[in-house]
Image (cartoon, rainbow, N blue to C red; front, side):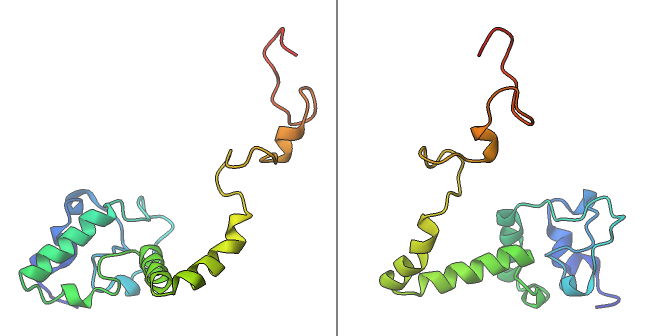
Length: 140
């Protein structure tokens, strides 16, 4: 979108615009065309998702023509994928949701969720063993 007025671009309305150095901005209509340069000081957008979505909604209400050209509506690729997955899951019947969740229930996602199994092999090591956390002096 060459020669476009800067003030019409969605990323111009982001509160971080003046101090942002991200080439791969989710508020850029040409987002997919820009690559992240390994030498860039900032590689990921630091604006909060809710902030970006508020910018999009405010511009859409004002009739900004570039907002509808945003590939993911102001979301990052990861956020957009998560949104699609959540929508797909919500559209499933409760029985299908339970069927999909059942295999996950046997996995331990959060440390300390289950007390009957060690979280890692480090928890099974005794003080003094290689890699074990040493006890303070005087404790055994």
